Length: 249
Image (cartoon, rainbow, N blue to C red; front, side):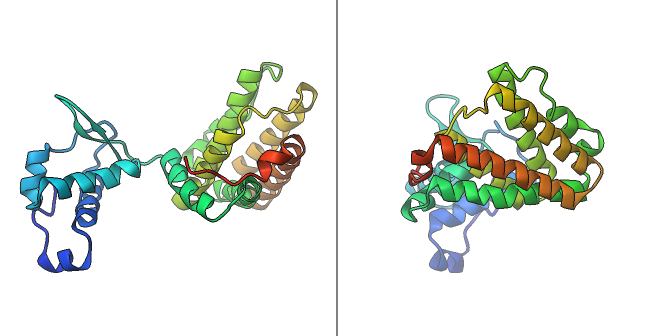
């Protein structure tokens, strides 16, 4: 299996750093071939021959992809570059560098979620994906036992993930999920008191019904109200954390 293009055009070499050109070529190859997570890329010697570059340049290209979470580099016999694909966690981790350098706080991160997740809910209602039509989103909104903290936390998180994925917009989905991942990395397990969890589940079920019936404006409104209530609770419980600058992960 060779990676196209086999040789780098001389004019391209002058415009861009060679390792970056190779990295982009590998990404195009993975995408065009539909290579799934866990697929091994060609051996180093083969890629050096394909691209006509030195070992150092190829390894720099692979390192670029590894840092961005697109591949993993496994050492030893049977190792080498392996496709990881795209994950919101990788995008979020990369974004935290910009957040830290820009002095972005967790309060700003939560405020961004307040804007974006209601939009995701509206898009989910408008796009009417197969998952929404089949009622699986409504199933994700249901929690059998709100007193079981593990079950409650798992299902509430799953519901938001399901709404985000149902938005049908790759950019909105990626941004929403990555922001949620960055937030949860710092603020884990913030739970409403048991006597308030029923209201949260009811809010999720109402959002799911609005999405299921294709009522985008209502889905957006309900999600915004729900997110605002959660944000107010978090700000009250963790005011110090909200003013912290997001750190590069």
